[in-house]
Image 1 (cartoon, rainbow, N blue to C red):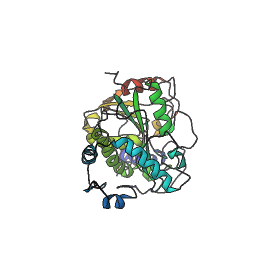
Image 2: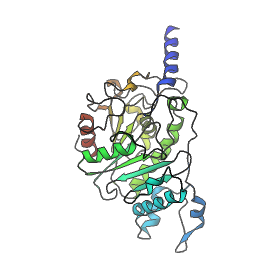
Image 3: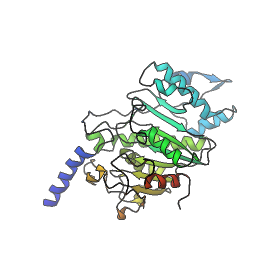
Image 4: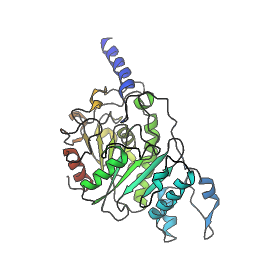
Length: 328
């Protein structure tokens, strides 16, 4: 009975402790944004050269790529321009900065709090590609909000690209509905499961346009997304940092061919989150524990929960080596 009581207490603590990067404020339950963005109906009704356009709801990324290849098109460049126009069309000041000249917005969805993916570097021609998957409290509405230069999806991506000497193209992928604050969303896998579907399709899209197999860097709740998607991801490396768990008992349980890495700093509050999974709450074992089987990333000089990409840290140097394929 004492053991059961301790487990239940840990589960309750997990509900109140598994949070994101923006603080400890409670929030309501989020509704996952899924499916194609607004404008899909108009797309379906249009044609190019008498050929119907691929349905964004049912066509695979490979089918879309084949369609554009037949037109000698440039899908990535087309998406940058299309998303610039889509951002402007919203008229929403929260997103206005995303349409600034020179920005490479690969994906944009204004529904809800908004979702966005931004590319730093040449995605199609780079020999190395990395994708940053952020955790809670991230969305398109707050994507450009002021914060530490090496934190937030964009800051992490820019810091990683600089650390590689600009040898890797890096994508800041805020492509799923993240939890807000502390609550059941952060302690459950519901939003992560929806995010895993979108991340899987995103990596398939990278493969379809000929991009290099990516190294994924999954922070906090984003690691839960990556864990649930692991068996379906077209990825070379899977790196989790500040993770509350991957909803798998071990690396073998992820059923992935990617190399799996894990990092946790000594002052990261995620270490206080119980590594349990009970009645759908909590995310399972600590991926940095030896028994989990992941390769350890040095992180002894990381400060707090968001310091993994800080310039000069051993973690960032290791991330850069992984992103460029220098670590075996």
